[in-house]
Each structure stands twice: as structure tokens, then as C-alpha cells.
Image 1 (cartoon, rainbow, N blue to C red):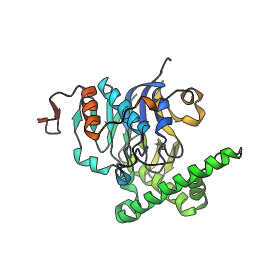
Image 2 (tube, one colour):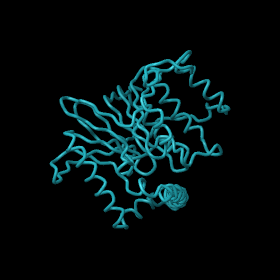
Image 3 (cartoon, one colour):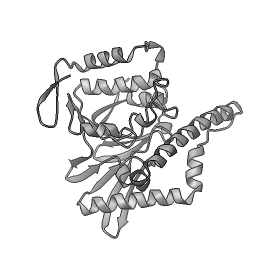
Length: 292
């Protein structure tokens, strides 16, 4: 199958390691494209809710696919979010073509693009972290319940529904939060003279022109792989929101999880390092060399 070329791919809020993650669908999508640059914009692995008891084969297959891109020397930027925030301590870490950074500034066709996860502008995250973590657990439980409801609905010949979307749409404060989030992000980006600003975090895929008291800017959000199954793609000098549900080509890709053998954590890491061809050392922000 000929793969579709994508100049820049932006993924966020995959939440590997949770019941709500659509890892299989993501893997199907990744197998249909050939990105030149990949930006992983936060909450890729959900360290908040990570459990050794739940790490399905298709979740590991996604990790291996991303590692494969790095092995092919495709630039991959990892911007940690709140659910994988522990990786922020490794800011400026390099491993082959992989770089961990807290934010990314790009110049694309004379336009300045600012990319970051967005949790820094979340009031709940900054002042009530315990409430944010509790909400994450409740959200994951709702997604799990939703999957059961949809299974029953399909057996009855009815379409799928999204309980979390219905809850969000019915709660005015949630809508207000999203609007405030977008306005705050855009104001800061305008002040710093950016033409585009790209976030994740709020699970709301979007490309739109935003006008505030500070000026105007193009705001984009890559969405998530829990509810929306979306990403941002840049090709032919144009940004678009990709939606898996509208992609019959990706949906037809066969993902054989039976090929995945049960490996220990140590064996998995060894195979990943071998695939990356890491034999000696990695680069730190000081430019020094440390043993791998």
C-alpha cells in the first residue's frame, strides 16, 4: 500500500495505558502515512493512570511504530503534557532524531508557529492538581462505561454515542472553560507575534481564526485518541484536521496483535534500544555524553 506523505504530523492526548485509548485505530492510521516530521504534543503515555496490569499489545505496537520512525531518522519532538509531566525533567534530551522539549517554535513558509500542550493555562491544573487527577480517573471510568454502552447499542443495531461529549456539551462551565482556554492561549501567542498557535490538552480538535482584544491569530488543536480520534496534518502548505472516522483507508488496515509476543519490561526495552541502534550514549542539554 502506497503511504500518504505528510510534511508535519501533530498528535496529542493519546493516553496509552488507559482503557479509553484507541491504540489500534491510531496504529492503523500511522501505517497509512509517511510523515517527514512528527510532534507528540503531550499526554502520549498516561503516567498518571499507568498500571502494569493494563498494557495491551496494540499499545506497545504504537510505541514500537514511533520508535521505528526515530530509527529511520525522522525528526520526532516530544512535548510532555500533564499526564506525562515527569518527562519534563528530561527537557533538551536527545536520542537519535528524538528530542524532548517543553514547547516548540517553528518557522513554516514565513509564518511563526508556536506548539505546546496547554496544561499551563489550565486553572484546575495549576491550583488543584488532586482534583485534576481525580477528574482524570472519573473520565477514564466514563469512557469505559461508554464502551460497554456502545457494545450493547451495536448489538441492538443502533449507532455509537459519546457520553463524555454529551456531558461536556450539557455543562455550560465546560464550554466556558474551553472558550477561556482558547482566548488565553491566543492572547499570549499574539503578544509574542506568532501567526499560529497549536495545543492539545482539552480534547477539542479545531482550526479557526480567533480575534481577541490583542489581535488575530489562527488557533489549532490536535484533539485526542480517546473520543475524537484526530490529529493535525500539514501538507501542501495547508493545515487540516485529520479524523480517523472519515478515513476508510485507515479503517481497512489489518493490525495483527497475535504477532506480538509477551515480553518482560526488560526485554521490551532491550528490543527498542536495538531497533534504535543505541550502542553507546545519548546527548544531554549540556552536550555531554552519558552511558545509555
